[in-house]
Image 1 (cartoon, protein in one colour):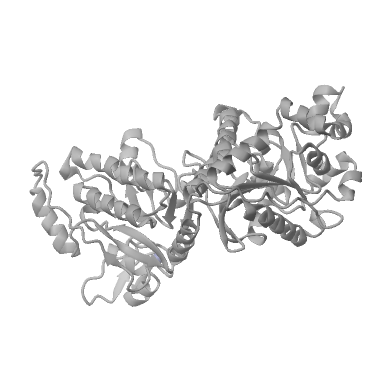
Image 2 (cartoon, rainbow, N blue to C red):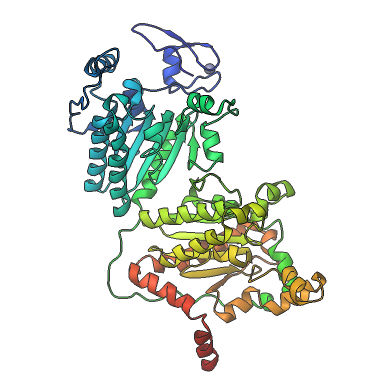
Length: 564
Ligand SMILES: [Zn+2]
């Protein structure tokens, strides 16, 4: 992948991707990305910093790399000789450069690894320097950014280099505990001990296009398995598909992406302590008459209409600056759930929702909005991220139900839903859920345990689909319309039951006739319900959320009936 390294005065280099002969200056202007084939060549740490941070903003941390040769390692050369050669070859003291900087005005502490220095290997000094960078981020309460490029742990320091995986992870854990954001940027290559620690245990993992990341290198895997590896194995796109990274970003967009992430990371609220309880939310609008009069079965059909805005439509229109984050970090990226960072009226929020589609092909590729366990685990990961960063959560619910397949059962669908429900009951930041279309059963509730639950006028929310209910309790599925009426699943019904706090009116006759108006209505309703929650102290917020659901117990419903 690498163009020939420029040596003094060399004007041309050959692209490692397509073998084009490229003018060095042109290549540099293009951020060392081949203009012919797009191959991203490796950058050293100084070049990387120059591309990522605001000019003149970088100040190196004062920490010096301690001189270590802990086990007196000698191969064909004594280790200190190799260190000396690496230093004179790179002009760096060690395989990482750490400092403070700003990215489009947002402050961060940044550590950039340099693959030229003994393969970017993680030794005791590198571990120490990155740990101190993390400690500085913690002390200043500014995000930590780590740009990785490494073959893994440094063999010449023996098992002590292995220990650095734990040392740096511990520093990342301290950031996590304190709600100080951490972001890693994987560049080519990131392997072994670095991949299996701070490259992937940060809050957000960005992979640069062309980066490869893995625990074992391809050569080792080929040797061990005796098999050829699939095309694109361990590439950024492979990692995205397998849920290992949040997003893949081409080099020219990396700085902008980092700026957006850092801005979101810095925009969250500080934990709100005890204080006087503010007023409740504004009284929600009563359901419109149309919703009451419409037949429940007709509403079910409206709720399922393929022209209704989807979660991605809302994210593009009702929210701003959406950055999609992918994957459950376990092995998959479920297409039926989408989510990420966005802004709502200038406030950073985390949005997660079910994704259907407008065409049959869309719907099929999104599994009709039916989340797999990986989808629920992606949602879980995202709401936990919101909790750490102090961001309010908006969920958009539109699913016939959780994926009922064999694979889903094998991967623990029930437990995945259960964990989401549990986590949302404890989440220390405000949560507003909007049922935008179908609120189908446990799959819907997995995203709908919230401080405020809103519902579009012609959405439905039910314990089971009318067809499913009819098949079980009626002689056959053709009784679905009767079942729909009996289940009390319309917005007007649910408002009466207290399950939803507000009904968002749809443009007449329904959302799919005027999607922009529907999206605007959702934006306004979410803002109206979210803003009053922002100042509620965390303990009060969580207590009220639990009380909200506690009242659906038989005792609570009895009290409601008595009061009527
Ligand atoms: Zn090329």
